[in-house]
Image (cartoon, rainbow, N blue to C red; front, side, top):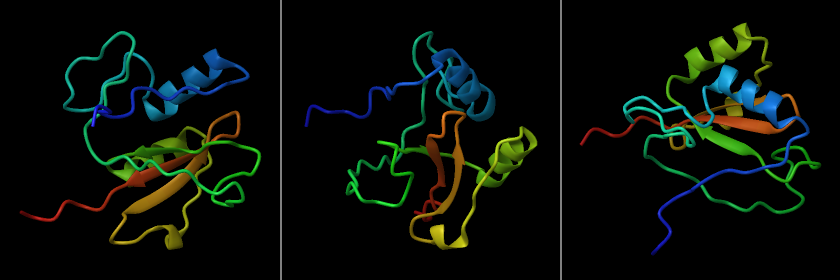
Length: 130
C-alpha cells in the first residue's frame, strides 16, 4: 500500500495564529515541535512517535462530539494524569468519564480548544510483555 500514514491535519480557524499558540502552549504541538525520542524538530512539521492511529468516519448523527463540528482530534498521549494536571493548572477545562476507559482500549479525557473543537486525549493500554 503506498499510503504510509497521516501527513497533516488541516482545518479552518477563526483566528489561526491564536489557535496555533493555544495548541503549542497547552499541548506542545505545532510546526517545529518534536515528541520525545524523535530527534530535533523540523522547521515545518511536528515530529511524532510511531504508534497506532485510528481512522474512522462516524455516522452524521453521532453524539460522540458536538453536532456542529465536522471533526474531533484524538491525540495519543503518554502519562495522561500529568497532562491533565498541566491542562487544569493552565485553566483548560478537562472532562473525564470512567465509562470511556477500558483495559482493552486505554484511558481517555476530553478538552476543547478556544474555538470549541473537541480534542480527545488517549493513553493507549500498556504494551503486553513480550
